[in-house]
Structure formats: C-alpha cells, structure tokens
Length: 185
View 1 (cartoon, rainbow, N blue to C red):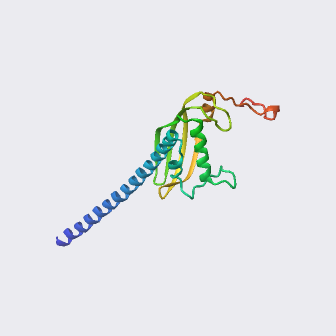
View 2: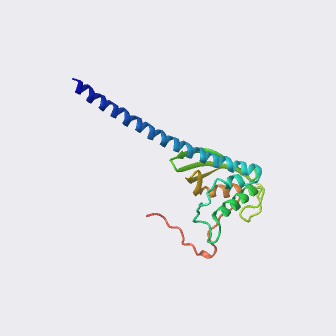
View 3: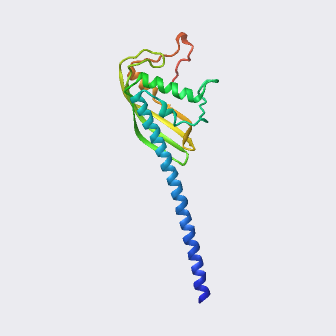
C-alpha cells in the first residue's frame, strides 16, 4: 500500500511539474508576442511623432545598425535610406497620420496594418505638392526584430489609392512598347 501511495505521489509530482513547465513556457511565448506587439506599436507612434515634429530621429533609432533593405541601391546605407524617406514623407505630408487597424505578432516579427491620411503640401518624390488630402490608404509592414530593434521591414502600400487621391495619373509606357491586353481564355 505504501509503495502504491509513493508511486502515485511521484507520478502526481511529475504531472504537476510538466504542467508548470508548460505554463511557464507558454507564458514566455505570450510575453515575447506582447513585447513584439509593443515594439510594433512604438514604431507606429514614432512615425506619428515624426509627422508632428518633422524630426525622424526617434523613429530611425528603432532600427538596428544591422538593418538590411534589399531595395536600397548598392552603396547606400539602409539606415540613411530610412532617414531620408522619413524626411521626404514628413515634408510632403506634415499632417500625416497612421492609424493602427491591426498588429499580429510572434516572438520576433510583427505584421502591422495601418491606414494613412494626410495632405500633400510639400514636394513628394520630386513632384510639386498638389494640396490634396488623402485618407484610408492601406499599408502593411512586416517588421523583424532582434534585440528590440528592427532588422528588416517589408512594406506593401496601396500606392494606386494614394496617387489617385493626390490627383496623379499613371499611364502605360509611350510608344506602344507594352503588349496589348488580351481577354482571358
């Protein structure tokens, strides 16, 4: 009888230990996701602050010295590119504002879905301001974090909506070099 009680006690302690360990691990994962989500929210907040102040310093500080961007031309620093793009945007749209629609996070990545609004009162991509307002432009960024800093940022923006609201037109290449559209078969 004593041996049976001892065996059940050991088994019970093992079950409780495994359960406690799984809760501890689960809490760690939830904590990492919460931390990453908070970092992503701080990224949005820093962008909004840059629009208000015109100063991209705090926003750029969220990026790691190891930040990479394959879309940046060779010989250009990815961090300098982030800074220059931010300056261009806050100059072109000084009343710009990002509104978070959703943030989905894992332990080291966050997908950030925002809509953007603003008024084009400054030079944008070399084009004079239109003075037109825009809103509801969808942007999704997938941020990868390492040691609390952004090491990668993949961004997809609804530029067609932005350009349309700014009054820009996008035309196919002149001279008929583009193939004619055909109907699906």
